[in-house]
Image (tube, rainbow, N blue to C red; front, side):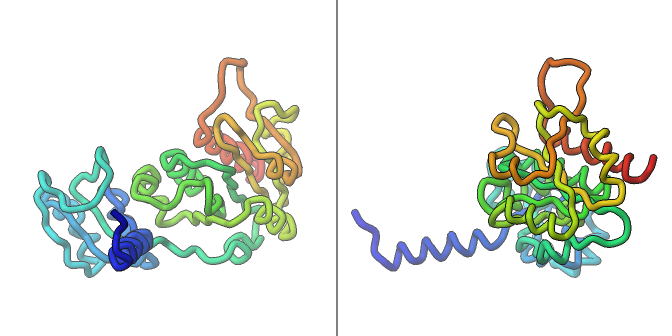
Length: 262
């Protein structure tokens, strides 16, 4: 039986409204979102225990929390989500334009570009590494990349609130824009001839973009062709490959050491 038009429209509106917000969960993710003045917060649900642990952040945020029973936690989270008694409904962050965020300044800034990295746990871990090693931004695509979700925020352990995460329409076009700003773009490829430490020596005074592909497929053809060079992470043997988030951390560390002159 075909649904009435008004029912279809109501369901469409509900889905659209839901897509405009997300639920962050877990003590670290919720605390950091409460402390982020740029985050638009809508609803806070906590257990009594979590409210006690987050008391300072809740007080500073000015929010009035809903105290819930841990056994009947009234938040639409995926089954298996470890919420630790805290969930916060928010709107996605707006980090602005790539040109403004990645404009070269003092030193040699770096950005991480992700080609079809869809796993939120990987992207969350990359955001943590990017924050630790001082990357200017992590850049993915609107399609075929992990969106801002509660799972990503929890994996990022607070870094999502501080480390810019941009999603652009076309990764290769964003790479060309970065090149025009003076960035040198190097893609990570296990079959490349040159090692990343050796390659980064030539970028000591230039902005650097590290381009990472999804595990398995790697970089797409246009992404690969848009890179200025391809490098590999040197391994002790030929017994496998690194997870993309581990590779990103190593690449960020290797280029940081070179560019800082350490």
